[in-house]
Figure 1 (cartoon, rainbow, N blue to C red):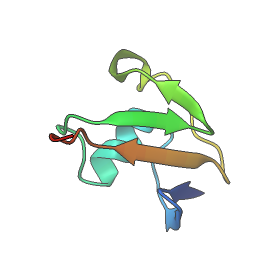
Figure 2 (figure 1 turned 180 degrees about the vertical axis):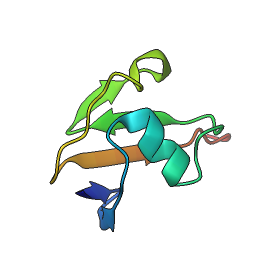
Figure 3 (figure 1 turned 45 degrees about the horizontal axis):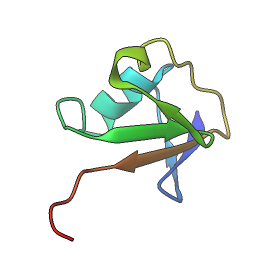
Length: 65
């Protein structure tokens, strides 16, 4: 399926958010995720189903100020 990841269109085979992160090489990373503008906590990623055209934002924490 074709989804937008941080503004870039990507073709993914994954059916849920957890699998998509694995496919993108981010499975073990400490990150925050939002699907179609809605925050998805780490514990809910496996149940977050993906659909063609979805928008996924992946953010990593940064130090500093």
